[in-house]
Length: 223
Ligand SMILES: [Zn+2]
Image (tube, rainbow, N blue to C red; front, side):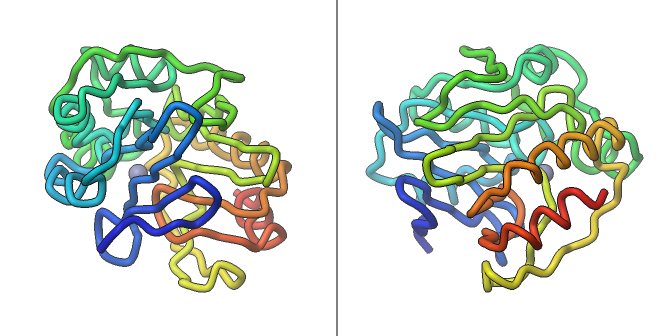
């Protein structure tokens, strides 16, 4: 399986079947930026997906174990610098990454972030990543980011709502425990902000893309 193009310069690579966990490659003016690196054992899959590409940066939407599991590996393999939100960067460099309100995330996801390294660029609201604007949307983790390209209204989100339908115009949502958020009320507010953008295409690090602005805004704004 290869990367699949979902928008201009936006490619999705499934790290597990059904696109339930993904990496996203954004091709910007300077080259390819790889967004999120999955699980500690995602290296082989990433290597296959990224073969022949020149990776100029590895950016992270949020430092949960299922998004940064292979981040140190990816930076080592490609020589790419690492970028993430400031609050998550501080934790990733040496703190505890159990930023989950509930036990499931603490017990299952947090230990997946076992290999760490230095963060080269701390991202904040308004920074640019491969032609996208960084939006600081804390709640799912303290440093969660989304990436927004206003020209064609493409939004890249690290967290849900998670679509399991392969028809982007007719999404179906996978319910997830709210305890996976660090701060559930903050995550709600962050999603409401993103819902207000009315994105024409949402590319998630979990689930399949959604091109149904009303349905996505309802799902994102609902809780
Ligand atoms: Zn996740």
